[in-house]
Structures are given as structure tokens and as C-alpha cells.
Amino acid sequence: MLSPGRILLLVSILFAAVAIGCTQNRAGAPDREKRPPQLEVPEKPETAAPPVLSKGSGIKKKIPVKVKTGDRLGWVDNALKTYPPEQFITGLGIAPDRKTAQKRALQELAKPFDKAISGRLKMRRETLGEAIGPFGQEWHILTEKNHTHSRETAMEPARVAEIFIEKHPQPTIYALAVLSRGDCSRLLAPMVQGLDRQLTGIIRQIEQSGNRTQANQRKLLQAFVRREVLDAALSAAKQGGKGVPPSIEPQTIVRLLKEKSKKN
Image 1: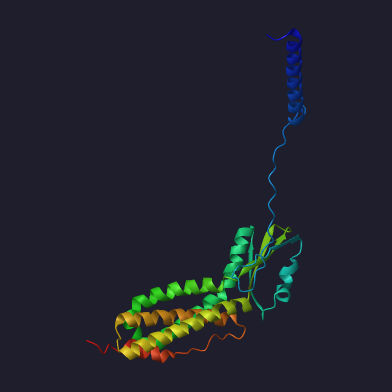
Image 2: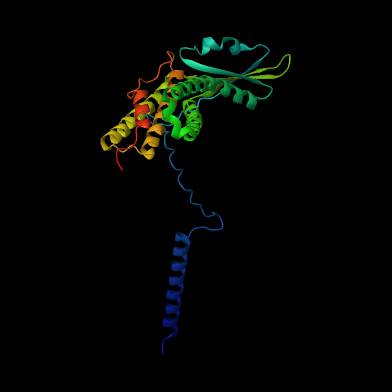
């Protein structure tokens, strides 16, 4: 048996060990009552710099519309000075509300293209003459569809540039639509040149094979109509009124539409 002195010594050692352990726990543990837990805040992602667009990126730069108010017409009186006709085609729309004024301005802007396309199609219809006979209905559909498509293509660079709000004698909205002749020409010219190459390829194929079926003749007619209406729109966009000189004469189209297939 242990003596009373030895028992007292063991109890003292035990209490000392417990006290040391509690002290270490308090020193290493966070004070949760006095210091609330800190939330982990995610790092803010770096904002990427906006890309610098090259001229050939194909992405249009949106230009804000200038809006002015007053009792006088302001720029409406000087539109030709602001947008000289040798560089721009313009259209003016006037209405009590802005939406209608903008719509009318773009309609006015489209008129030179409609006139040029209609004149070209009338001339080509006379040139084709009797050769168009088997394709009469298709000619009507082709010309209507391509007329609309070519006008819309030519109008792609167009925009409503300025709005003027006249307050007196009554509220009136003036909208000015503008189209850069240079932008329009650069858009249309490669298309016309591409159709010239396509026409050349179709004609070469027909002449080498001697296969003048209506299917091949129809393909030829379709490419010819597309080429002519786009070139007409291009001529309207250019100050001099001239498009791309044709690589295929209309008489060649007439001859190939008239001739029958050499194959049985």
C-alpha cells in the first residue's frame, strides 16, 4: 500500500498536468465569443481589356445617333454641307413621331437603288428578248426576289445619323439617314466580281459538255440576274454611276439560253 505522503504527491502531479493542458488549449484555440469567424471573400476577377477590332473583323461599330432640339431646323438646312453628296447618299424623313420619321428616312435613302435596279432589269429583259420565253415565270420570281435582296444588301451600311426635334409651331421629328458611298461600294464590288467568276465557270461547263438542258440554262439565268441587280445597286452607290464592267456579254447569255442541248 502507498503511504499517505506518496498518495498526496501523485494527486499533486495529476492536478498540475491537467492545468498545463487546459492552458495550452486556451492559448491555441480562437476566441469564438469575442472574435466572429472571418468570411473568405473571393478575389475579384480581373476585367479583360476590350478587344481592339481590326478593319477586317466584320464587326460593325455602333455610332450613336445625334439628337438636337430647338425652334429652327438646324442641321436639316445644312445636310448637304454635313454630308456632301459626292461622299454620302442621304434620306430625310419627317413625321410626328421618331419611329415613323426614321422609317421614312431609310425609305428615301433606298429610292436611288430601287430606281437603278428597275432600270437595269428592264434593259436586260429587252436584251434577252425571246430567249426568256421558257423562263418567263421564273424571270418574274427571280427579278422580284433579287431586287429586294440587292437593295437590302446595299443598305447594310446605312444608318440614321441625326434626329432633330422641332418644337414650334408644332412638334415635328426630322430624321436624317446616311449611307457612305465608299462603304457601300466596298461591300458590293467583291460580290459582283464573284458572280462574274461564277458565270464564267457555268458558261465554260455548258460549252465544254454541250449540255444545254433547261436545268443548266436556269442556273445560268439565276447567276446572271443576281449579278446584274447587284451591279445596278453598285452603280447607284458610286458617284459616277458605273458598276463593274461585265466579263460576260449579255449576247452570250442570249445565245446559250436559245441553244438546245447537243446530247440526247
